[in-house]
Image (cartoon, rainbow, N blue to C red; front, top):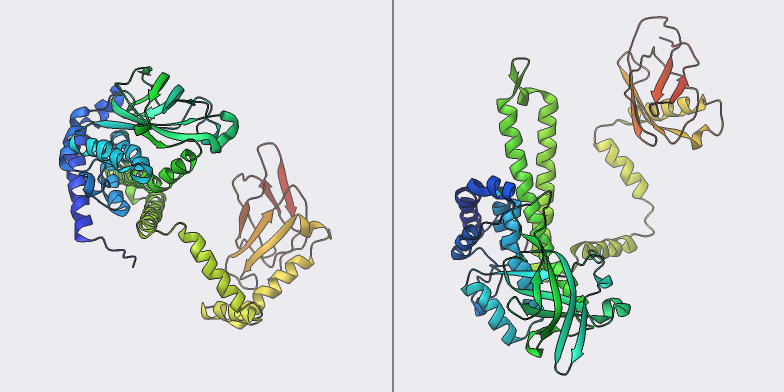
Length: 458
């Protein structure tokens, strides 16, 4: 059963990762980012603490943590620095295809190597012309007896400069696309492996990123994780398992951004008060918090689904919803039920009838019969009393049409692009006011004019 409250073990993991980020990552994060350098001493300390690749099964020396547990660790580490966290978590990414598809011997050797020593590993699918299009890779794997010989280039590989081994995906024939891809383990010390120049990135600069070049690299059968034809599925399964961890990393960055923004809003002053006391700034901070909480919940749900073996929680919900819809397919009471729901939410039948009447009256005074295809009234409130009233219009494209208002009007609106919901605020001016024109800017060069054709009546 899904529980929104973290277990004591998960709270302990988060606390340990939080302290580590505060004591070891945050003090060096700015310098590492400026110098584009990954701190190996910080990585060694993280390995000693047991937060590097903690999902490796205990049978191979790992922590045996769940994917949900890992999100708690990753979020706290990313709060300190997303670049350093990316390189730390790259070991989990490299270990995953071995954990999913490797032989027992491969798991003992390479997963055990990752847990016993503070070494780095890399996962390599991307190429100069095959990033997100994994099936378009050109790195070749040629069969030679019982071995495979690899030639090609892998780009944007995390930890490439420091990795002790690489999990490489290559194709037997580029024309086969995904049907020709295999997965191989290549150790850094093997002949024909070289690393290019360090990539000078715009962001996450503390994470080492580099190019791996393979020239006639001979791979024995013992290092073949998946033969050509089975590698693409393994790559996709690896992404499926590790992507919640990427979301958790984003949550850590978002939380850090919120805390930094709140701190600045308390410090910076305008008009004699901290800007945090201004409503607009408060709204911005509230929106940031909402997005963070929504993202965090989605990440936890995805990780929970992995741990429970649920391939696609959304698809499960859709199937349940379709069964419910079929059960009530001939139920014609849905309309009345919705109307009753609106009444329960505080709108009386008289008010609802008045609103529909106002809506009909406004639409009845459009001189152009085709204007309904170009502009549509979607809501009206309180046009029959002396309080301010609002009319919402959706502008599909440039057009002119007439509107009759039940009170004097004055409108001031910012420029808005086409196909945007514009809310027009109608305010009381004075008795006997003359008809006014409403101008809504469609872009910087043109404006949409909406003339009011009837003198307001009180």
